[in-house]
Length: 547
Image (cartoon, rainbow, N blue to C red; front, side):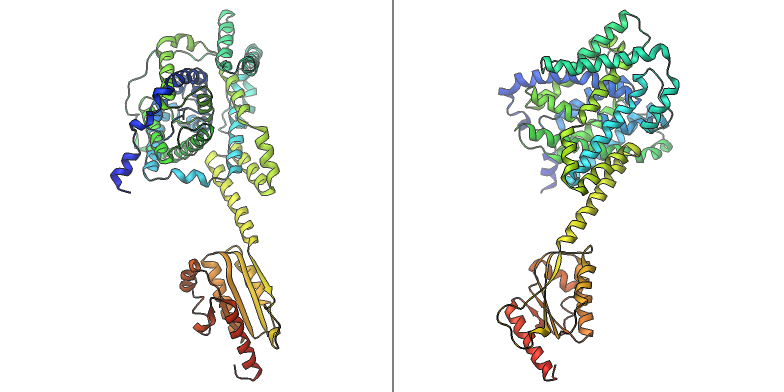
């Protein structure tokens, strides 16, 4: 593709809004609905990450708007997410909240470059059990991260969510414990009951409003969000210290990888929910990169596509980018008109929202389906989930993919086989001196030695015919083993004939030396009958002592 045309394909066009004339009412309603749902989540994710509620709101507004305009999905809603909070938490503890904006800019640049380099299809290589294990691990971490606020205590010093949750019990104050737990229970109850009354009721927002009103009127001893600005901060470059930047390269790459993976998965899920046109994965990366970059310039957090908010958008009637744009404008109106009210929300109420959100992230039927599918898939799922909780999200994805690849290669290796066959047609004298082997399935580094051992076991034969027409996969190791096998048999005085090398394997077989290892170039055949006739002639001559 022409470079100029390709770059142009990554930019917004009027075609993004071609259905707006008939969908604008649904888009506006969906945008307002998603904005209401996103408000408590943006606040909660900002607080939970350590960057503050303001950073969560800024991210939802700025990144949500930029991703909606420049992203590759017509219905994706972007902003701060639980997975990103899990990644940000540990290095906020280490470096302080001031580095979040810088990491957001750095990660945004990396994701943007990934989109320009057409890396958007990479997510399709992540196996389903890895994705589900990753999701389960994130849900567990999000839940554990809320334990300190839910009991009115300070978080532990450890960067591990489980250890920090346990450590927080040492700082529990009896004066706040029951009020905090009560707030969490009320929030959870309202969030569960509200959708049963009417599916459009914003349970999280109602729950936070109820707890906030009660806590304010009763002057309950609960920690609050604190003062918020009544407008967006002015954009500007984050503080730049070369020494700090060097130490943040690793975290920025981790954030970029997570932003890309989660955004592409969310866009793919969104595309499966409603027919609004296929999403463009490369453009989606460009949009998400610009979104995190813009968010960092305004002092926000890295952003990703949010599956839950995207699903709410679709269910509420959103069909174009106007819905996600409206969601950002609704949040901007909240910041401008209700910052004082929002500042009084108890942190325990936000913890309750995130705890319920974490529980809802886990689909029991999906977990059951993964565990019951195959033993290897169940192992991949559990390993990914355990490593996610115990160590690091990106490490967990890498290990999960590696384990899945191991099982896939083992299954592929087992699909390959070496089978000794009877010669077709009526038997002739001397046929017992001819061994016909059929290679099928896959012959690569995981299965090559098994084939070599099988063929080298033969004895009391004069000619070996190797049929390769049924071989589906051949790599350099497999071709090299065939070469070594031919050499070994020829050294034993056994003539080797090769039949049916497929066209796509011929070049590799030639380069590695399979053809050159044959005693004579006439020992390569395309049909089986001529190969058998040639083998019988060798046996006949051997019987006369004239091989």
